[in-house]
Each structure stands twice: as C-alpha cells, then as structure tokens.
Image (cartoon, helix red, strand yellow):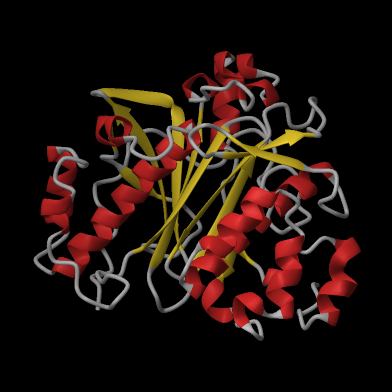
Length: 345
C-alpha cells in the first residue's frame, strides 16, 4: 500500500492558487470550450474487439484515412482501443466547441511534432480565440483537455511500478537519470524507503514534464525541453480530499515561468493514475509548418498580465469520466446503438 503522503513531492508553494477571475472550466461532452474528459478503456469491451461492429462503426466516424489506418496498425488490442478513443476525444471536443452534431465538417490535422489540432472551422474568436485540444493515454485511461485561451497539455500516468508484463520496474532511476534534475531526484528519494512510493512521485513529475512539452508541441524526442523544466513545489488544491489534487508551477533553466500553471488530479479507482493539465503561453508553441499557429488568433492575450493570470487561474477540474458513447455525435447515436453501443446519455 502506498504512503498517503508520498505523492506530495514537496512543501506547499508560496504563490496563491485557485479561484481567480475568468470563466469556469466545464466538464462533459457538451460543455463547450473548456473540457476535461476521461474514458476508462478497461470498462469498454466491445463485441468482436477491433473487427467487431461497434469498434468499426466508431472507426468510420474518423474521416481522415491516415488516422484510421494508424489505429488499426497497432498490434495489441489495448493499444487499438487507446488510439481510437484518443482520436474520438479530439473530435468530440472539437464538435463541442463548435456546437456541431456530427464530425463531418471537421478538419483535424497534426503538426510536424504530431500534435493534433482543429484546422477548420474554428470557434468564435470572441469566445475561444486560441481554442486547442490535447489528449493522452496510459494504463487504464485515455484523457482529454481543451482550452479557449491558453495552450493545453495533458498527460496521464499509470503510477503502478510494473511494465506491461507485470514485471516490477526497478531501474527507473538509472533509466531516467538525466531526465529529472538533481533537485527533482531529491524529491523522489524523499518520498520514503519504499520503491513504490518513490515511483509514484517520479511518475507525477514525469507526467508534469510530458504535459509541458505537449502543450508546447515539441513532439517525440524532446529531451532538451524535458530536462530543462523542473517541478519543485506543489500546493494541495482546496476542496479536495488529501492527496487528490495539486497546483504547481514550472522552473525552466533555473527561472520560474509565471505564464504557466499545472494542475494534477488523482484518477478514480483502485489502479493509481494521475493526470496533469498544463496551461501555457502561445509564445512557446513549436510548430514548424505554421498551420497550427494560424488557428491561434489572439496570441497577444498572454501579454495582458492581469487577463492572462485570470485565464491561468480559472478552475481546472478533474476529468469527467464518460462512457465511449459520450463521444458519439448525436446524429450518429442511433446507428451506434444498432451496432451494440450504449446510448448516451
């Protein structure tokens, strides 16, 4: 059993958090511009697996040939499920932002770093000038976050100290030695003598780093960005049980970056998972082709200090856990039920 205090790597941060001005971040597939959604793939067991009618129906909701092909390219059934749900979450969040009842008019593209984005149409500029979405999957969960003003990055981490075969991971400190700073490794080692407790703290720090590079859009192999950022202080969020939610900031190359905010929540269930959601500035976006940046229509908002802080400090709630049917557009719901899917709501 894990130490209840092991997942709080450091003392409380000094800067105030929570509350703040700005619109509240809603949850649920119809919430609009700011979403936090999660699907537990362990609980989704469609008949016939990847070749069954339910899975194939959902796959055909994805208009882009390349994305459909990538889903089916995975060899493991669990990986196919994660890949499909991740792509459906991007489209469901996009349709929600546009108030669309289907995915037919959506154009989803990827940056050179493989970050998915809504290319067209775009939400109203007055309401969601920089709308963007991000997804992550690990272990039991596929998660999604979207933001109307700030850059969004999300990462979910399965904090069980075992690989896919169930073999204990004993060499994580050696394997990732250069990816955490010396001060971060002090936090890991300070979690206690139990390796499971150390691994949970390591996983939370690693998830924060992943959320940071995913908000930026660095792509795979972003080792310089991963090692340059440090997460040294987390403050428990009010109104949550102990060891369930934290608020933190990032230090990059030794300098606190006040234009960023990170929120962590423990996912429900017996299998320990944590999600980290990053909110960051548009000036950090990495987009070699420029197509994604072109969808961010008010980048100057980050220079308005008071307004930017309001956007950062707006509520960032835990993910709303939904069934797969919640990702199906209303116009396609009857067809989904006919192939064996569960109607939502």
